[in-house]
Length: 155
Image (cartoon, rainbow, N blue to C red; front, top):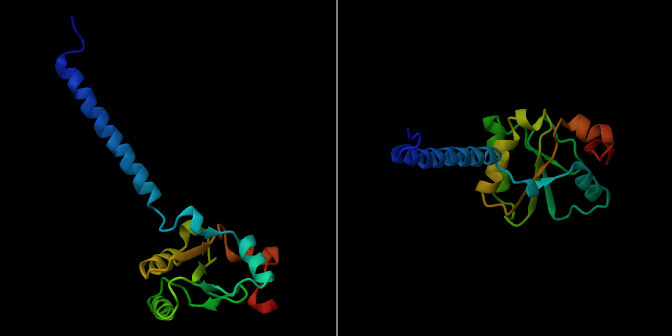
């Protein structure tokens, strides 16, 4: 009695191919979840050091959350709200596409933030070559204020 017939052998490669394609599409979907790449994230400490050393002349820092607390940042308002999203787009129209633009929110953990994704997609969609996102995994209080990084209040 033969267990593996020619037909059974032919089924397995097709099955394996389908399985491989599903696995690959799952990886692509997972990696495409966020609109930014790892190298586009900037650590809070790195930005704080640039601000302290007054090395921010070529950087535009935009708050796309509820308040602009980081020293030198410009308040755009929560980017998930249509009027603030329009304000962001209008503000960016006259900014050089070669300027480093760093956005941040900090209202909540990254995975729940309604503001950073639409704002970041807008930056890249408008052709900004140096679009960056401040890596605030928890919130602005824990990842910036509690570390005594420079704020607009202590200029």
